[in-house]
Length: 166
Image (cartoon, rainbow, N blue to C red; front, side, top):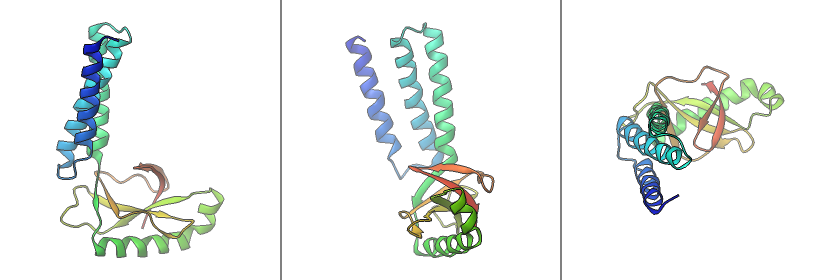
């Protein structure tokens, strides 16, 4: 890999990390920034790996679009006190109702609906509950454009949580 490619790759990664952590951006802005950065990086890596320019560009566009859509589809923000209370009540109720099934399937984390607030950007707001410690993990609310199907597993940051609704 030549020095120009390395510099460009480092700039792309830095940009992705910078924009990926900006809480003040709307989901659309975050999706565009992260998708563009990921697309450029994928194209550069593809080119450095020996792909022809058209193939590298196609790879970059595909990766960028997918990354942008995923970033746009799940936005996150800090919960207010009301959202924590609603999520905790919903989680305790859902866990009590499905405890045997969740234990049998060895489900560690569940995602439950919570109330929406002024920062909410999706159609559904949810939080993640730890079934072993019986408490919410963190103070993050995840806003999804479309909620996952009930009983399916979705990725929320570092947690793979089964969506139980409420």
